[in-house]
Length: 349
Image (cartoon, rainbow, N blue to C red; front, side):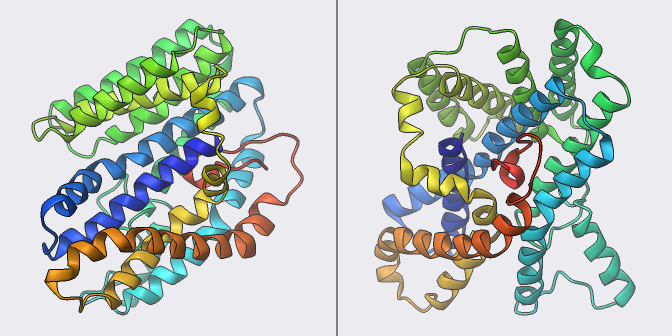
């Protein structure tokens, strides 16, 4: 689990790193090719986070139906401490943007800040103050709706086959509505539903995918999603399936894949993945801003040799946030059992 979180947040880092080099269009050759690939695919690390979230949160709710406010209060405690620090950093950095995201009118500024605090960007056409905020909207409202379905409507009392059919039907409706051109459909949420189906499969002791087959499927989907004519709804569907299959092979079989995902440095990154996810973009943008005077003739070299040091700087800054805020205020609490998930809540408690 920690290794998969590390891979997911590593992909998101690559996306933000590559985007910064493509903004001015000065990278060429192999550097430009690599940057274009991971500008697109790196963002799909979020889908992997979503699969993990769906699997963990839904699995918890299947095993135990907690009190709604108690459960959501714990989710808020898990998300908000580190998020508030990241939001304050974003507010400061916004003052240095050529065009500020925060409105100058006090009432509009209050409404915009409240929307960010309420995790509305991403589900609604609101530009987030920090680029990663949109995925937290998916996470938060998934927690809310899923918990309501269990606590209020008794979803856990349905037979497993009916629950699985309901989840699969919802995923199909999201894909079909997006394919039909209906605006505002949260199609990337299909990965959350895939995680829920994975939890159902685990409960039924279904046969896990083979590591080789899962790796080949992920590689195939990687290629398909990069094709210019692949529609967004199909990409979201294929990513959800491939990442769920990968998780199946990693979780339910002892193999070279599970051992590789238990590599200690990868687990370190996975442990601080929420803090890293929240603030790594600030580090990337700030460092590359100060390196912006590099002549174009050296930009390709800087792209390659700067990747590791900037990643290390982002890791160090994120570790500081983790140790100072996330661990003491979100993790070091007494709870009955782990109830963690997602880029925002994927830590043992």
